[in-house]
Length: 390
Image 1 (cartoon, rainbow, N blue to C red):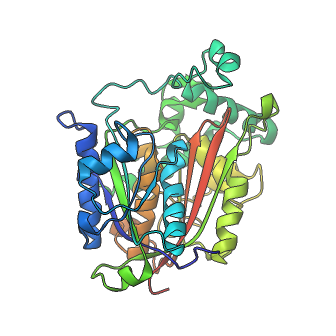
Image 2: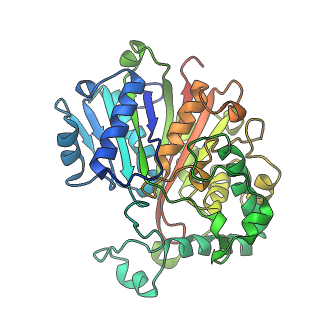
């Protein structure tokens, strides 16, 4: 069974705030859920499937369904793959819709790490994890694990800090057109390299922002989409894959995108040349570089040169990316950037991105998420989305 064209994204909503000190996590989930449903022209009573990940409070989907008043549910999914969860949820929702399990699926994300001063540098403690006794003793942090991957990529392929900085520069050029962006000021390569070193070779400006907020999506059956006043976006392809540490025999230069990308593109029946816009997970600059290579937009080891020549700049670069400013400059709610990647792809396909960065005649978009750590184990998810009338 294929999901190609068998489900549409009808609603997409990003919380407007980047710091929310006076609301609970459940309240933020509710606000984004209402926003996405309003965007789709639907209501809570129309929802018959609900998807959330580890950011949901309480007993996950059960607690949240009760809080949101989702009384007509017949399908639940709480797949947890970190920041890639929400792209995975879109694929799972499309499959459930294609199988006749549901017709209107709601997906929510929310987090308050900025207001609650949640530490972002230390990797979460998973004392029961089988790998904990072998890794936790060395005190790894989130940024150090990405720095490890960046340093290895530099060693293998000659990638430079200047090339990584070009990714931040492109994101900042886009963020200046987003009034909601946390860092709306363009930066230069020199400013990235002059920012404090956090974990060699990654500087502060190689890292994503830390924000409160959230987002939500509504995925619907084609017959539901046909009756809505709002333009929808077709789900054409989906792929997902873990990247395992393999007991230490890990290639630090590759991610799960090596497998998730080709699966999504094959299902959609598209090639790299067909992609007009890409939303790529950007927890750190190295995350983008490796994803671009592993998704097949350039050869392995050639990502540095690809990004350094302006390929990522919208609207006319070879691969316009993250036109909202991405996690590097705009928003990284709950330290999970996958949701906003889908939301901005939907904006581009609807022609609703900021005018200065709207890709002309955008018909096909790729959205890609990564969860976990490039230095150990992670999960990748890729979506191919198409304009409704394309």
